[in-house]
Structures are given as C-alpha cells and as structure tokens.
Image 1 (cartoon, helix red, strand yellow):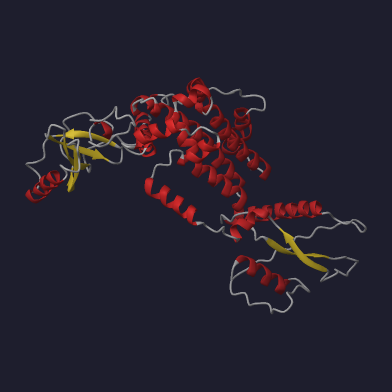
Image 2: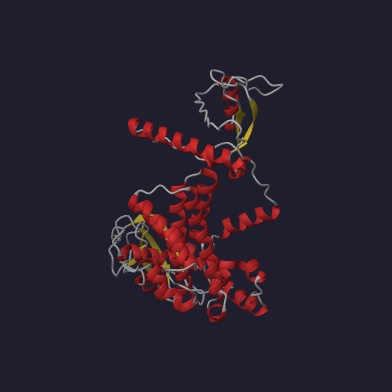
Length: 446
C-alpha cells in the first residue's frame, strides 16, 4: 500500500462520514497515526484558497512542535512533516459547527498539498536521446563541474521534494563554493598551472571563498564582485552564505522562503559567472572553460561555437578528453591541499601498491603508490624480490604493450605486492607514473 492509499484508507476509518464511493475501505496492515488539522472561521466568512493554505501551514507548524517535543523526550530522531514530503492530496472537509453539533461529515473534498510533490508521484518519461546522454556521462567521466551540479541538485531535491529547508540551504551554500572554486581551478588548469602551485592559492583559509574569488577570479573574468546592492554576488552573500552561517553557527531553522531565496541566489550566481566568462578577453583566453561550463549546445545557443573552435577542440581531444584531464588535475590539487592542511596521514610505503614503469628509452623503474594520500615515490629495484612468475608476466605484458604504446612509456601494477624502500621524495603521481598526464597541452608528459 503506497502512502497516498494508506492516507485515504486511514481517513475512511477515522473520520466520520468520509468514504470513497464504490470502493470499500481497505484494511490497514501497518501502524498509522491520523492527524486532523482543524481551523475555525467565523460564521459568514468564506475562506479563500490562500486562507486555507495558511491554515494548513499553521497546523503543520503545530504538528512539528509536537514531534519535536516527542523527539526531545524520547531521543527518537523523527522527522517533522513538510508539505513537500506529504502526498500530493489530502482529504479535506468543510463543516458548520453549532454547539454540540460538530457538523460531520460536512462537505468533503481534497486539498492540494504541494505541486512539488507531483514530481515524486509521476516520473517523467526518459527519451532515447536522454538515455544516450546518461550513457555518455557515465562512460566518459569527464563532467568538469560535477561537484557543483550534484550539490545544486541536492539543494533542489531537499527544497521541492523533501521539504528539508535546512539541508537545502546547506547544499546551496556548498554548491556555490564548489562553483566558484571549481571555476577558478579550471582557469588555472587552462593556464597550465601545476597542481602543487594551484593548491598554494588555497593554503591561506582566512580570505575565504569571497576573498579568493575577488583576488583570483575577478582579474581573469571581470564582473561585479560588490558585497552590497542587488548584484548576483551580493545576493549570494546575503541569501545563501549569510543564511548558511546562521544555520551552522546559530542553529537557525530556515523557512521555505529562505531556502528558496538561497537556491535562487546560487543559480543567479551561475548565470553571472557564465556571462562574465563568455564575454571579451576571458572567452578567448579560456575557451575550454567556456566549453566545460556550457557544452556545445550552450555555446551554440549563444553564438559562441565556431568552426575555428571546433578545429581547436578536435586537436585537443585528439590527445585525451579535456574534461577527464581536468578532473585528474583537480584530484591532484585536492590531494596536495589535503597534505598541506594535514587532513590525511602522510604517505607511506607500507601497504602501497607497487608499479613497474618503463621510460621512453626502455629503462625500467619501480614506484610505490599510496592511494590513501594520493602520493607516489620511487623505490629501490624490486626485481630480485618479485616472484619469478609475476616478473615474467610483467615482462611479457611490457612486450605486448610495445605496439599499443607509441611513446614507449607504460606502467604496470604488480598484483599481490606492496611496500618497498623509498629511494626518492613523495610526489603527486603524475610526476612519476607514465601516462598520468593532466594538462591538455601535454606540457607535463614524462
């Protein structure tokens, strides 16, 4: 029995005179609590749809207080109700109360709770074109601004489907910071800045995302970065970052209006960043970033996709997907930042994977890769310690890869081996492991 069916079955059993014509009330096989919200209007006043909606919200607020009291007393973390988490429609009755006469059953009908609930009830049809897009994103793993989009969608879901306004505000704030920092990182990658240098821009946490954006983003793309007024940055600071600060540091419980304004400010910020990036010198200097944010369809709709750009894109993607390269580069920046801020344990050869690598000149060397920290280092030759079968298998595979690796540079992870004695400093893997390229121009190739 789904939630909607359970609701009406419970109503038939508990509300006098309520029944659906032509169908007997089904049995309820699971525990259910029926809450009746009653609002009194004076005789002669006909409530409007807005009056009923406001009364419903007031009733939900009282119910939330009851459930909060229950949670505090029992330590059972129940979730307060919200319009968006309720069924699309609930039973409603209008009746006249006169003394002891409660007026049952009254005029029975339905109350539309939330249009947002319809999305949970009716799934949209997925076209063949959409299925193809899903497959492309899944297989390529090259969605440059995935962090931003995922958190923005989480904010939308919490707002319109779950009615969790606190979660929506926090997700909106997270998405905005992911957008601003993600855009800055993409620009730095486009400038062929090494990951270690890019991470240094995040070493000082005191300026925060706004200070960092003003210092590093604004000179590159322009725009209005004023903290006051009605600009997109000011709106984000007030409606998103400001409300998030109150939620985190003041235990503020945001309203739906605040959560909606928080989300709207983020989408407005996104549109402003696209506008600034797509204008003038920034577009010519960072074409891959424009493409990463807009995609081909977005560029074409703005008249930005030309034959010249297509030729450049073909040349770049002839090496590897720019999106995939950027995601690798960004991951390396994240590993460097984690080490800079001591957020992860220092790398160690204990338990590290062992890789046999070959240079262009045919010489081989050994690498230990610590996946926990994301760092690698050269280790002393292990050929004498490797079981003969594993060594022969690696040599055979190296020979088979000769034709498949025109550069002559390959790396093979030897299974069931770990550790070693470090013979060099720990570094980000792209500096040691062949085919770990991060830059679209090949400037970091070994």
